Image (tube, rainbow, N blue to C red; front, side, top):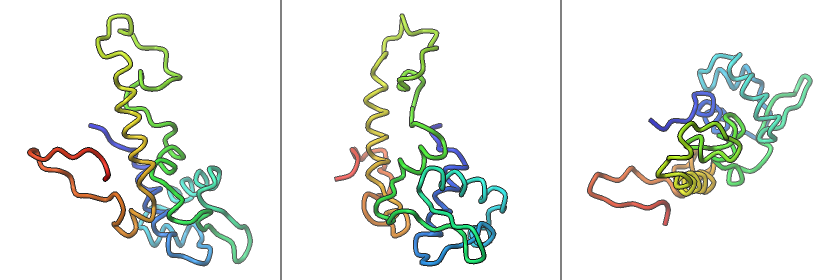
Length: 151
């Protein structure tokens, strides 16, 4: 099963909660709004701040807010901020060199194009699309349909 991590999923939830906020929100307020445990929300917010997806301000009126516009934050940005580079298989990861069947693999190098397509799709879907349900957001195709990405 191909799945993003719970932390990346929670990061999308947190960023979606901040999408329409003008004022900074504390980690506690965000945790309450999203029903996430405060330690989890705090951990994710720190990572998102380090990756410059949110900005943080200390002090009495401090908190977190989006560092960019919702249309400028992509799903690729969020997932890579939390999980690191997107790689569907270890051989699609340029840094990975430990494949035990590399010399006899019949599909060596072929996963790279699949990885590229997934990465591009995640780059094309923005936080705005997730919040509003517009853009590239389409229902899954049925078995009989043949859908190739966003058009």
